[in-house]
Length: 418
Image (tube, helix red, strand yellow):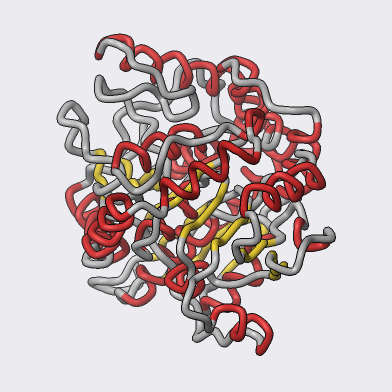
């Protein structure tokens, strides 16, 4: 410890555009609460961390390149293959990650980890005998309430829902176990681990408005509210300000970190569905903004969603956890076109919360269906519900709650890893 109330905490994250901002917000929250904190992440998060004013160090690998290679061949919805696909993004870097985490964690009081870095961080925490807390945006904890979020939403009996969590997490562990155990032997000198770690504390940076906390979760799994990362004050370009400054707010369209789909066909479908309605087209990793489009569709580069979304009428997006939360917090309806992974879960959650019509899987996207969904999202009932959910979400103080919970876990010794 550096002082009676101060801790040194290392945070780890590796993921797409939606993964780093919440961990950066949590890092900043810890620093604002007088702790020393450093975030380890991939290269795509470096500029964001610099803007947020938090210490940041790089993990090996290029997540954007990995995602492009993965999605260019299509993504299987079968759990086993999906687990192997996701694991393939990380396993080639497992040794380098373990060395980096070990080097940075040696003089820390605790580890807070997320996503693809989880098994590496747990191994290091076990080796150094320091506490560790999971942090994330996916409620992948056994429950009777819903299936594992990496599976398609299904109506199953409660015991079957619990089983899906056990099966999917077992498949992830099977995919990661070999590289993790190789790194354990080579880097930390630990014996191979045959079973997953269990019962460590977990913080979920999600809103209870979108995922009500299941009654059968253990006490050490906590929903805190989401972890937004406010950016610096944003001023849109003159052209964009003029486009936004009319009586009728435009539609927003963006697919974030998703790549590998037919961009030209998507633009054609959007143009036909919008029927001249004004829309902002965000480039994202797919660079949709580089394609030719009609004058009612304005291509835009990077723009902070928390400041842009309150100025649009409907957000048409892929259903990433971060985008779902930002749109809902802004009080606007969504039309979700999920492409891969947990996006189908989040699309279903927005529909269940009453802030979005039924989703359209990207493989079934057509102009008539999209036009109908945008009209449904513009309906007064969904708009009123979106405003109410947004108002409630803006009262949540997720980062503050998460920091307090980390402090409590560490004070009580609940976060010790074995």
